[in-house]
Image (cartoon, rainbow, N blue to C red; front, side, top):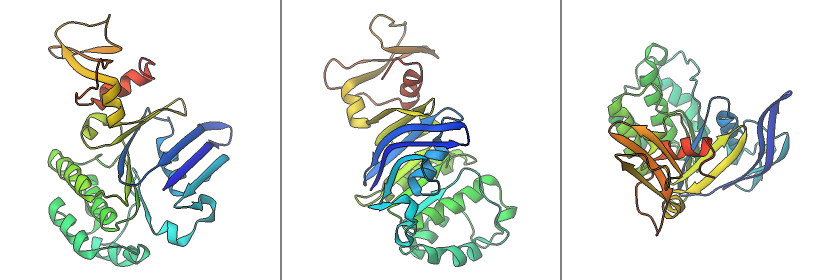
Length: 269
């Protein structure tokens, strides 16, 4: 679906991403994690063709990203973290932008609005950040694009809306679609993502499926620190959370937040 080969990107002299190799496959929900300034947003924009690599190449749906092919662009949706202010109702927004997406489904759109409890007749610039985000998530999913990119989608959402979003994403994904979710809230994506991507110091230092992670590592909790046998551990309420090498094929639930911290400290490669 999308392939990045030896991609590097910079703003002037400031390096943002270095030598990224990545293939995005359909039917997968990817979680993209990294510290502030690690290059997550730039990577999403490279993946969807909003930015072009300084070196290397990006191929999107078999087309070079620099072509900005109209058919390809109409099958990609990027929901940015920072929402541009739109002066008008949700209904006028949809009337203006929905025709740009060839698979936009109005029935799906109204169902999502109902689930998120958003009224499309409301003026978007008067809504809270969370309400605006829920409207745009409804629109994004109704586009039914093959590639959907969500940059910090849970920012501003209340607990109920986050739960609804998780259920909707799991129901929405199919063998012809891919989702990449960039987030600082790793714990919120537990049991949602199929593949974990971690950026550190402008490089992609970790890329593995949840299935492979479960085969290689065991995630657990102990009353005492297991320094001798654990690859990584940290103090948590009522004891220690740890990652150890799986002695057999593991089946413990993956703690993405713990994994992320272990990767950043170099304890897990």
